[in-house]
Length: 402
Ligand SMILES: *Cc1c(COP(=O)(O)O)cnc(C)c1O
Image (cartoon, rainbow, N blue to C red):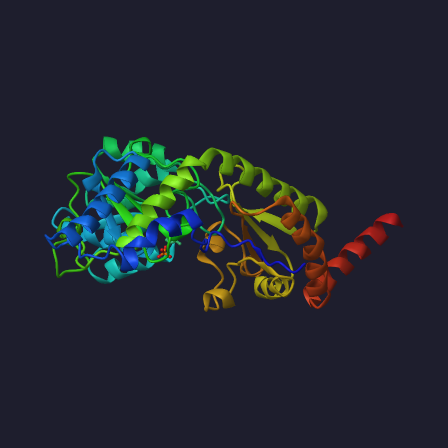
């Protein structure tokens, strides 16, 4: 196989040619500073405000001025958490989140903990689900914000955001969701989800890297992270990334206009892959909820091997995937998400995430399945633990036979 196969869409996606085409004029041709009052400035201002309208409409926001453009999904998460924490510090200093959030949320919470806030990290069940009643149980009179991700980037589990949001709305508690994995992939509507703040990133839905957006419901106070200018209604200083903003809006429009067909096709491909792995291979488990999961996400743990070695061997065969194991994340600890759903360190280390996208085909999954068992067997052949386990099994069957 000469062509490489990309199974890492949860990490990032390539810019769709139609999106690129929409962006191109805003580099050299239409370049005015949107804050300038002359015609050059008015042109780019118009492009930004059109993009804002599109994004607002696509996620069901009540008005375009509830959309704030940022520099990434991480920035949107930081802005939501730090911005609300600072703005409401006199009301209370308690925040609730889950133990399996993206680091953009978790590390911001750690920062807030060092600065006088209390954070509750809710546990999840073995499928990775946050139970709504655990959110209610954690509420205190000091709680100012709850932040629960819409879908997990590693194991794909989709949280009951609408249900949690309803409970919080009844109690007047602000609710943020990190929807970076779901926007453009499954339906996302801020009214249906009952959220006050929502983060997204263009590069996860075939838009450009370095552009995100934060939805902030009208009336919610959020302090800025960046000072220095009146851009984004005084909430984010800095001359706007016009091409990026135009690209984000175009990518979202495009993704949503083909959402159902892509969702159905990718879900079918994912299930085909999951079924084959689970039926054709031994000592493997699927991580994340079987059905409440992102269309393109499959996450497995293979016993007796390191996810890292698996990735390198797949890469040699031209397949790009990901893992939540040690070396990829640059730390010795396995993924907090896999530990969060109750896996032991050994099992967590042998994990593999395959994230499918709109370009993937059944032939690619078949090729993947033609090389994966071979790689896994080769790696297990080098594992003393695997030999101990299989010998034990054989001995047990011998004694049974006798
Ligand atoms: C990718 C991702 C982020 C970070 O987005 P960036 O644009 O890379 O900063 C945050 N949360 C989730 C769930 C993600 O998948």
